Length: 123
Image (tube, rainbow, N blue to C red; front, side, top):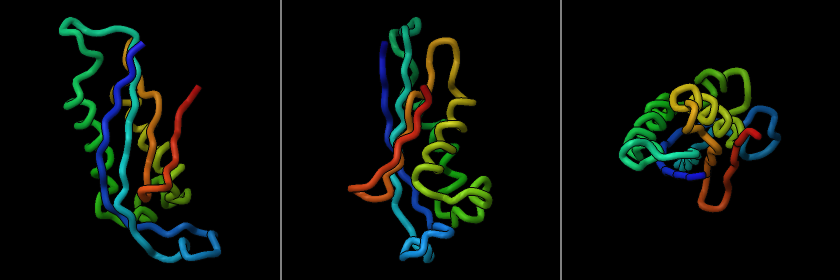
C-alpha cells in the first residue's frame, strides 16, 4: 500500500455559531490543508497519482473558500464552519474527483493554526 500527502493553504474568515466565546465573533485564519491518499498499486509510469494533479484538484476545491466568509458558503450556511466540518467537506468533495479502483482519499487534515488541527477520515 502506498500513501501520498500534499499540503496547500487558503485564507478565510468565519464565525462559530453558538460557541459562546471569542470564536463566535468574526475572525480569520490562514488555514493549512493536508490531503492523504492511498493506492494499492502504481500506474504504468510507477506513480500512484501525480502530485500536481492531486494539488490541482485540492486547490480547485479550496478556491471556493479562499478569501471568503465561510458562513456564507454552502454547506457552512447550514453547519458550523469548524475545522472538523471543513476537513469533512474537503474530503467528500475530493473523493468525488479522484477515488477510483486504486486511488482513494484516506484523510484530510485542516490546520487553523500552527498548533490546532482537525482530521476527517472514513473507515
